[in-house]
Amino acid sequence: MRVDLFDFELPAERIAQRPVEPRDSARLLEVGADAPVDRIVRDLPSLLRAGDLLVFNDTRVIPARLHGIRPGDGGDGPEARRDVTFEALLVRRLADGAWRAFCRPGKRLKQGDTLRFGDDLSAIVRGKTGDGALDLVFDADAASLPRLLDAHGAVPLPPYIRGGVGDARDRADYQTVYAARDGAVAAPTAGLHFTPELLATLRDKGVATTMVTLHVGAGTFQPVRVADTEAHVMHAEWGEVGAEAVRAVEAARARGGRVVSVGTTPLRLLESVAAERDGRIEPWSGETSIFITPGFEFRVVDLLLTNFHLPRSTLFMLVSAFAGLERMRSAYAHAIARGYRFYSYGDATLLYRGKPA
Image 1 (tube, rainbow, N blue to C red):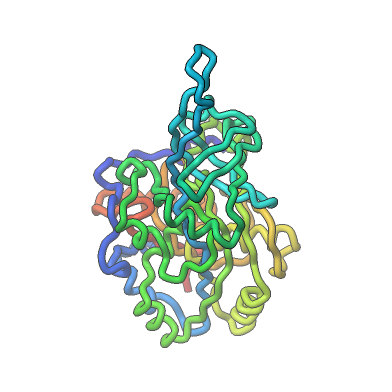
Image 2 (cartoon, rainbow, N blue to C red; image 1 turned 90 degrees about the vertical axis):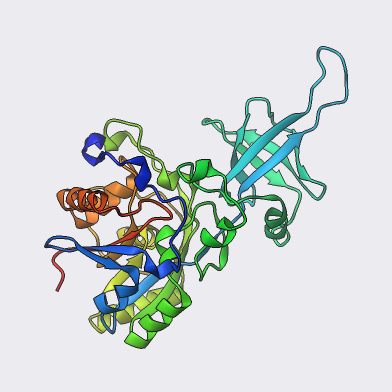
């Protein structure tokens, strides 16, 4: 499909720079078969039924933005290597424990260089990839690296939020209240709207919950820069669907409940497994690079709670596949006209696959 079909104009003032407080007071646009309905996230219990299943992504955002130095060789001649200061953004943990990172400036960093991020944290450049990323091997073991990143790293906000520069407040704001497993470099943003009180209300309503894990990568929110979707290469992200989540989905189906994905990440993970297993949901772990565009056959998820997405992005393509392109274009026009807040810290949509009952 032509990528320009998924383009739209968004005024800069519609891009949220901070979340609302409390989290569940954000606006919620319900997008069903009829005209969009303006609500707030706190209305969600009234829109779901006893027996429905909410599927959350329990990934935890790590402080993935680091500032470091590549020490020079101490020489003073024309061939001497000078100190290089740089910024690194960790984008993905590799299967062997190394980290892929984008560094600025990256051209002056070479294979074999030692990079220092503090007295107690350093890494070796193992190699470079074709797109300019570096593979870094940290000197810390898997158990101590999260603590060291907390000490030396910063929150990796998207560039449309204050230029990507986070502060102390973002350490809490850019994290879901149920985050548990380190590994994401971007938040599963639909989950940012949930509070302990809202979760308790949903539980009292009889809405079930379960967790899956997808470590969100930096490529998730990037616009597609090719003219046709067939030419786009999707980034890969690591995920896991455990046996408990499988049982929860099966139980919801057996009692006639609906599977409600909290964000696009659980949807992509569940639909990846179903696509591999002929519609079945089974315990699974690995990398997924599923690219969902209109025409995709959804087999698991019935409703999708998600934020408003970038024009020409894979996520706007996904929601258009789920709810219909023209319906989503109309819903986004409605949201822009009525002052909804967009992107990671913005408001939410509740999307139905097919006509809501």
